[in-house]
Every structure is written in C-alpha cells, then in structure tokens.
Image 1 (cartoon, rainbow, N blue to C red):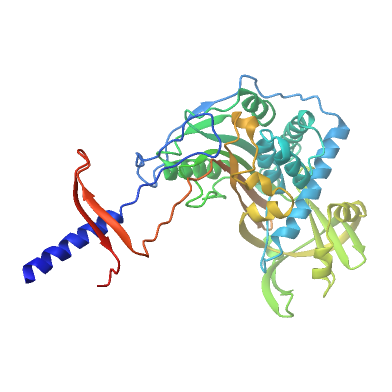
Image 2 (image 1 turned 120 degrees about the horizontal axis):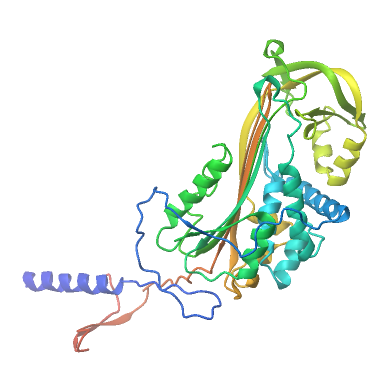
Length: 450
C-alpha cells in the first residue's frame, strides 16, 4: 500500500511538472513579414563590446546647406522654447541639481522625427517646437551644427587650456533589418550620421556596451553608461545617439590663489561651505525685478555662461515662471560693468529617462507600440520609441568649464504579448505519447489538496 502511494505521488508530481511547462512566441505589431520567434541565446558574452559595420546613405554630408537667417532663427527659437519647457518637467520631482543638454536632446529627436509620419509627426513637432517643415528643418540643424563646430578658432588657449566643442551623431541598427534609403540619406546629409550595424537580437547586452563605449569616446569619458541595463533587448531595432563635448577656458580666468571658502545659502535657510572663486573684470551684468544676472565669456568670446540668481526667497517663483522669452529678455538687458565676481566651484552629473517628460509635453503617440508611425524609417508601422535617455556632466573651476551631454533614442518593435495562466479550478489532464498521439493516462483534479 505504501509503495502504491509513493508511485501515485511520483505520477502526480510528473503531471504537475508537465502542466507548468510554458512556451513563449514573439511577434511584431504590424509587419509585412511573418512573426519571428526569438529563441537563439546571446552569442557574445555579457559585458563584451562587439565590432560593427557602418552603412551610410548614398548622399554625403552637405557642408554648405541652403538655409536662410530666418530659418536658422526659427530653429533656435523653437529649440529654446523646448529647452525651458523641458526644464519645467525635469525639475517637477527633483530636489537637487539638474543639468542637461537640450541641444543634444533636440538633435537626437530631430533625427528620429525624420522618420515620423501622421499624428506621430504632428505631436513631435508640437512638443519639440519644430516650426519648420521637414525639408527645411534638417538643413537648419545641419547649418547650426556647422556653425557651432567653427567656434573657438579665435581662442588663444588661456592658461594652456584649449577650446574644444565636439558634436557627433550616430545610428545603431539591427543587422539585416530594412531601413529606408531616404531616411538614411536625410541623416547622412544633415547630421553626418552613418548606420552602425549591430545584432540586438542575439547580443543585446554587448550591443548596449558598444554604443555606450562610443558615447564615452565622443565625450572624453565624461558620459559613461548612457544606456542603462535592460534598455536594449531583442525587440530593439534602432538607436539614435547624439553626443556633445565642451571644454573651454574663461576669457577672464580666476586665480586659484583667490579661491576661498565661503557660505552658500540653501533654499531651506541653512548654509553650506563651498570653494568660492573670485575675479575682478569687466563682465556683462544686469539687475532686474527679483534677480541679478552676469555673463562669463569663454576664451575667444564666442560662447558664454549666463548665471541668473533670483533674490532671496524668490527662487521658486522665478523658476516656475522661467520661459525662453523671459531669458531672452534678461540676456538682452546685459551691460558691461567692472565688478568683483564671486562664484562657487561645482561639478556634478545628471541622468534622465525623458519618456514621461516628452509625453507630458505632447508626444505620447511616439511611445505607443500600437499608434506610433515611424513608417519613414522602415516603410511599415512596426516601430515605436521605447525610451529617450539623457546624461550630462558639468565642471566649473578657476580655469573654465568642461561639459558633456549625450542622448539616446531607443526604437523597437512591440514586445510579444505575455500570457498568464493560473490553474486555479478543477481540471482534466492526460499523459500521451507525442509522436504517436497515444493517450497513456487520463485524469482529473477536483481538489489538489486531497
């Protein structure tokens, strides 16, 4: 009798184990090809970058785009509006320092926008404040990038610190995945971006590390691990990256001998001791209703840092009302004034997932796996933005400023729907021979606890 009970228990365990077997099948949202089942394990060890092939559109980079002053001004105005709209989103739930590169973010999303259509295109243009038609927008981005690349030629290398402003864009696509040549040409002509082919399906983690290494190289190792673990998976088909690195000396350098410990007054009324730099020079300065502002030019006098300090107790109200138009008005009021300037040294980095912020600004469809339309990229409705990630770094000291920013737009196909089955009521089961179909056992379970 005991042996029979043991046999019955073994049989029951075998039956339950058989019931718990699950198979997973992946499929795309809308495609002209059959669904693909991804079952091949990664072929590259985790943590190992991989090599990649580069494919570019047939058209070379346009080095003298036909862009009017009005078109360039419209682009800059729209980007500035987006920059401060995004600022309001990023500081909503933040209690600490914030730093980001709106130029990098706008550029990466503009490259993505080149493949958008329908309501996706409309929402992106509204959220990003792209007021120019696509035929003018991308050449305007090209012209702006070319002008920025020319900065620093008048720099003299004050205190041995050279001027550096590096902007780089790239696409990372799934090998053997069809990308429209027209889309590749727009990005090659206007952003200098080639398509780097990777295998996200078989080596997602190695591909992520490869992209991160490229970003690190472009930003002098200041932006590392842009794409966090899990951001690249077997459904990823395209990643668009834009990186910017800036390193320049002050036009009027501070001396380290003049740096002293000083008090910095925090919002809660307490104070922190910081290293306060001091210099006496002719700076552009303005005092307005509830604020003071000063402009610190960099060597060559082509790029500057503007610092706006609201009066005590007015930071929150000033920040909440800060817009591109308000900042433009403040900068327009600056006048040269000989002054003794004291500012703290600081260095920090920030990182963000911009999916919620961009959705709140008016482009949620781009992130929807059922509604997004990036047919300009593949010709199909199979892509959506999985996430937009951004990292930035800044360091300000006596010699000047070092800053870097990078943005990654991760685009993928819809993940396979996940089926959950819970056997929580009476059931019938059978044990059969698969090859012949012969049923060997049949049973039912009305109460598994018995």
